[in-house]
Length: 409
Image (cartoon, rainbow, N blue to C red; front, side):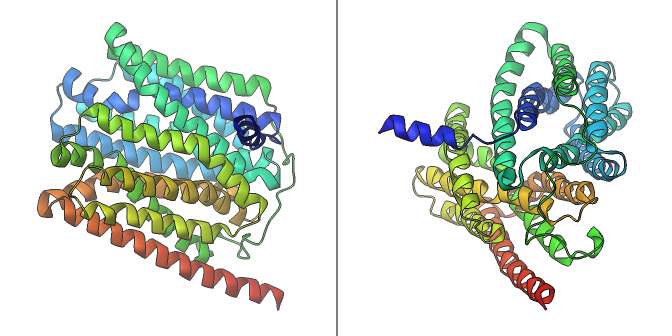
């Protein structure tokens, strides 16, 4: 029985091209190497002696650089190709990580962090376009899921490795290792994967494909971006307000909060690929799955209002995890499949920018609500936002149906 279950699980990973596996490997190396990020605010406060306000402004520059890089990377991917952007982004950001450790004044660090994140995050939309190029059309959602697994595993390994480096080499060691990881990852990619002027597999413009000529006139896509922004805003609460709530309301230690995060990671590792594979094989509507995911995320906050026992945190995390597994892989796939040929980069740039904007807004919004009105108010607001995203999905389905009918007529 166990052997059959294991074989079925492994079968979900079959059918990918060699290039997709190499992209997955370099994504893991790159994400595991971004061990500077969890310790950046600590480094700025403790090593460079900046005030909380200054740290906050530097983190704002971090988010703005990420948004600018996402937009620029997508635009340039359409102009000169994703391959060149990926190589330039990772190799240059690796060199900049070596250099940034020598920047120690406030204003120069604001500019430096903005610049390095702008170059580093040019990689993301280019990488999404590369997945659309190298993945078989029928495997595209699973390819996004495979890369997401690599990201999750990399983020799981990175902070632990980063802590060990700080203990033995100090913060400066982080910058050297992070820069080296970027350069090693892109070197593997450049050696093993050759640039393709045309997609290996012709892009299969499915029913989701846009019938408009410009992303700025694609009404359906902009409603979809609103849904993506809200779902990301809710998801990032895991890293901002929820750990504080665990400690202040229930007295959980960092280790116990870590166990909840581990549960999230393990469920994603074992269940996301089979779930995506099942729905993909049945050709289930991506928008319907995203709608269900938004509803589950909304429930994850409403159940926190029943705060009489700590076990509710597990239930909340389960709702959040299954919502995440339905939203993110199919959102990635929908965004790319929606793009007309030649505009994939622009579409993926706006899609990744919605996440960058959510990252900036999530902590600020949540923490301000908590400071003014308390945790319960924040959970109510987040739950209502989840319901708004769900309603937006119903509207999306309506718009999509009208678009299909117009095409048939």
